[in-house]
Length: 219
Image (cartoon, rainbow, N blue to C red):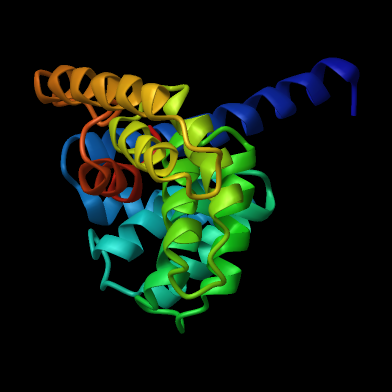
């Protein structure tokens, strides 16, 4: 095979892969979830981390395919193993809830911690809440405070409030009422800002952010 022919073949293959990825995104945008899932499933089986995430989300929500959260968890794991923080968060959320796969709080915390270490603000917040509450795992207020502080740096309203509560009560951190009041004020501002914007990136309630993160594919 000549060099020119090899380049042409490689270009065609790359173009096919890009077209297949676009097929999934364009199908999802027009509401054809069956076609979107079919396209993403092909790429997922080929090892594409984003397609694995997107196909898992459709399985998670029952869009274009019968809902199967156990199968979704398997795809989330494949994507997370390749470093996708959103997939790691989603897998952690499913394992913590026992929603499909069996409930496994320790494994959930491990996946959430991986996502949090990658800078995922929602994972940082959720991990902090689980650790401070001891929800299925041993309570660790000191580590919880560290993760809530990371999320608070990004003006996550609920993280600001929860961290302020820890400072006000001296739980996991030295008590600091002045700092706590400052965080409460910032939480109020973040909440007010969020209510004026319907974007999933807005720092609104934890529940709204979690739903955005779990159900929206990466297009």
